Each structure stands twice: as C-alpha cells, then as structure tokens.
Image 1 (tube, helix red, strand yellow):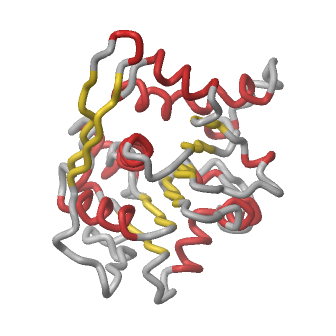
Image 2 (cartoon, rainbow, N blue to C red; image 1 turned 45 degrees about the horizontal axis):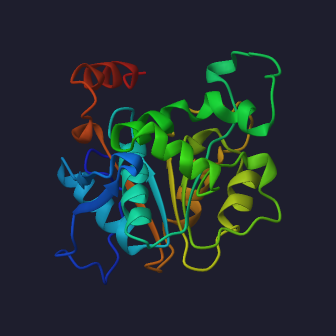
Length: 247
C-alpha cells in the first residue's frame, strides 16, 4: 500500500465541511448524572475515515495495528446510538485464534463462547461508558455480540454494526455479513490485511472485498486505508511495522 493510502476513495459528493468531531451525552442511571462522550479525529487520515463513516452505508476501514480503526468505528457507533440514530449496536468478529493457536472448544452459551474474541471492542466501550450502562444495554438487547456463524437469515434493522478483524473472515462470510444490512443501518468493516490468520489459497474476506468494491462508483460504499502515519497507540509500533514490512 502506498503511504498516501492508494485505496482511499473520496466520494464525489463528500462534503469536506462535514463534521469530524462527534459528541453525545450519556445519563448515568441511578447517579442521576451525565457525562459527555466525544470522538475527534487525531490525524488527517482519521478525519477522512470519519467523514466516510458518517456519509456511507458501508465503510471498509483497514490499515496497520494502532491506527484507531476499531476505536473510530466503535465510539462513532456509541455516539450515534446515544443520539437516537440507531436502536442497536451489533459487534461481530471472526472466531479465529491468532496465527494457528488453538484453544479448543470454549464452554458456555454462544455469548460466553464469543466473549473472549470481543474483549478488545468491550475495552473500547468501557472507556466511554459505565460498565453498569453496558450491562443494562446488553440485558435490553441493545448491545449485541453476534458470531458470523449465526447471522444467516438475520437482518440488521436500525443497527450500527462493527465488523472487526475481518481479515480473518472468508469471502463467503464477508458476503453473507454484508447482505444482512437492512433499513436505517450502517456497517463499518475493519481489519489489517497484513495480519490475517486465514491460511487458504483464496484471499481473505477483507482483501477480497477491497479489491471487489474499489471501483464501485457509489457513495454508499467507501474504502479507506489508514497508513503508518495514523499509528497513535504507541510510537514504537511504526518501527515494528516498518521492520516486518521489509520482507
């Protein structure tokens, strides 16, 4: 990928004045207090990403570790949910261990089985929401974790969907997940195509989708690449990525 992010496609109708700072007020239940949740782009590439997420129905957001892909998608979804734009937050991830490590069958019901894979997304949630609030929304089925395996026949209705780590999906799984979209919903697909744990002859679902949709002239679908210039987690990650990209 070029350092400028060669796959970033700016829709012709994209208004450069569209907001890149998003805010909502969360009520803190029994404490009868409120606090403000805000999301601001920290790099120029993140500004572009937020504009596309805000404009498009489906956004593919990909790039190296530490660029804020999952954070942008999750916190944007939380804010728009609290503002009443969506009725549900749906989080999904492929249930694949890193680089061939096998943990065996996990105990529990489907939610308990998928819970370990959702830790990174719930860590982000806990940065902006009280745990009691999160628990309440889960009990009300307003925050839903949904394995790819159980999505056939599902319709995403008035939902904001974060499909995370989708470099670990198969092409068939990506197609199935994308076609779940329904009325007043939005999907943000995130991942790092350089860190796929899919060992097949075909491209993983994210790489395939980027190639498949990059020439589609439709503002409803956006593809945005975040490069090393947007690594904000820790400065040393830039060095790590550079060294692993050398061969």
